[in-house]
Length: 133
Figure 1 (cartoon, rainbow, N blue to C red):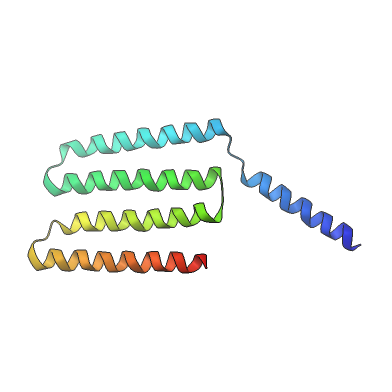
Figure 2 (cartoon, rainbow, N blue to C red):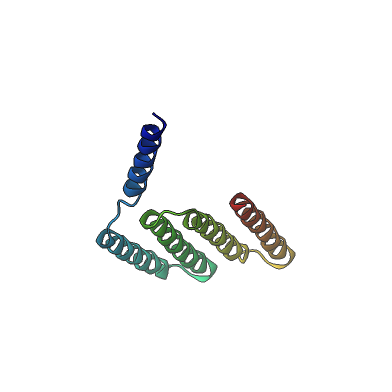
């Protein structure tokens, strides 16, 4: 009875692993191409903007591309490291965009804004890394 149960558990685990990797290399490559095309289109949409609004737009486009690529990699090869990498990329992207938005402010307000963004980023990274342990 014990052997049958263990065999069934092992087969379920193998089946779950096989279904988790449901994306083929061709699907992965096509999705990667779509992400790059979306990035180019988003960046092109920023061309009409001026000053810091353009910088923020470009930072958001780049961030979305980075997050999408990290998520795609996690879909293609799901591992705990890839899942953690997705969360780190999201935190880094949020921080980069927040810093860029802070540049709309001047003087001490800009410094405070960037300091707060850094603190939020540091807490997020610490939480992500603590979850790894």
